[in-house]
Image 1 (cartoon, rainbow, N blue to C red):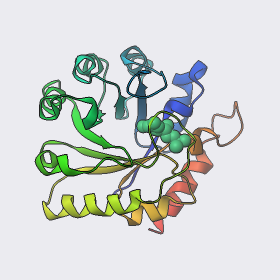
Image 2 (cartoon, protein in one colour):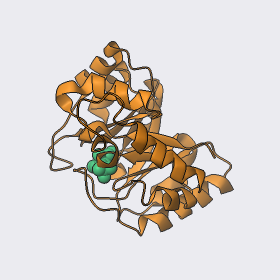
Image 3 (cartoon, helix red, strand yellow):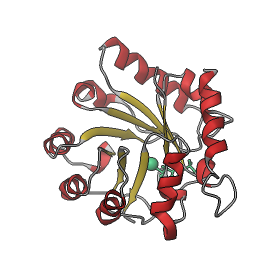
Image 4 (cartoon, protein in one colour):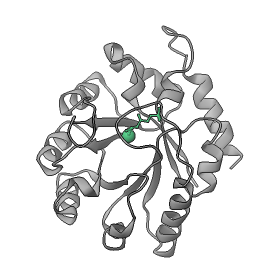
Length: 227
Ligand code: DX5
Ligand code: ZN
């Protein structure tokens, strides 16, 4: 299994975002997790396509994993595609027509994914799993960084891993919320391959040190090596 670490820039210093993203990628992160919140689907407001485009113009070439916590979904999809998104994931309950939203993301040239909140059932995967590139399981309720990992999501991860493997699909299984060196190994053992970590990564090290993220990324990788 190839493991990928996806720092969530929600916990980065927004006043120095380009530099923060450069530093975390230089330290060995694989993907940029980009949390989009609209103060409607979730009670918080963050960043949109302009910031995604700014990161591309800044020179970021790593995949950008856009996690839409917005309702409605479809209106904003083409904007993120133009802004350079790689993945676009959305919450099924935020879209009136899930299959259409998936197709829209694909037609726009991005990789679609579905996101499940801790209490959201997985039933829509029955008819969508072969059309998406990523399943994102929320291990906290969406809206804020720095929350505590909800352990029952490990059972959900095992269930999704079984579905992906049974159908022999090339779909990534990502987890988001409360992940750090203390639990990443257990999460990997449940079948997850892509790990979002916000506060654990961006809270590490000393402000102003460009290598401040080296040791946290190395610590996460060391735990993954034991999985
Ligand atoms: C929460 C976001 C997460 C968040 C994770 O709604 O989707 O990506 O940044 O933050 P941590 O890793 O601090 O739980
Ligand atoms: Zn997220």
